[in-house]
Length: 230
View 1 (cartoon, rainbow, N blue to C red):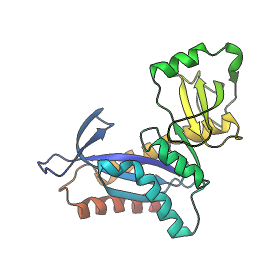
View 2: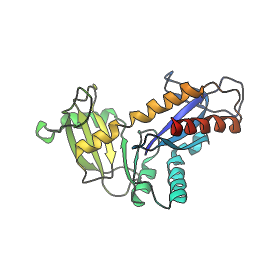
View 3: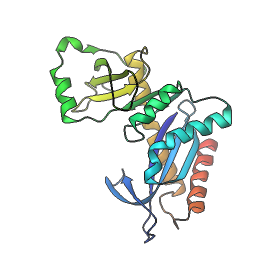
View 4: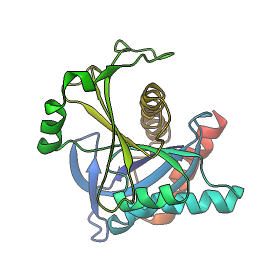
């Protein structure tokens, strides 16, 4: 499953509406935060929640896991999401449940200095297959590291030559999977962003008539239904 948040902007004066980051405008503004989960193979939305408060947003991934287990009797096999979706403590919870995940790690100056200090011999090239992109042979630095609030080692894959100025850092609990496969799986995550954008445009989901939770949930439910039907 690909997981992501989407801020539905609100332009009224309701004091109960919190401010969230709106990627379209690269700023924080009043809005309602929605969490969406998309089946990575079928590209269909299968879960959404538009009643998330800022204090609870990091734990929404665990609520999705609970929902999916209650609905199907099974835990999700793999979750793919960006660095702002949850905490290291929740990554540890996913790992203890045996759920595979791939996420990003934020790049701090100290971390970037450590990567630059790594010897050239520590990096190796991998080939990305079945990927329609110009950068198919990135270099990777594959290590096991320790993080706060996460028990045991976690795998960090630093990636360069992907067309970005700074390295991309993947974090995963999949210790044996090939680096190329991890990169290709995460690269597909942009599909959920494209699907959210399509849903927003098709159903005018960002043009709310009110901040009433029932109205927002109705709009979001229509988006999920439309995603399944079309």
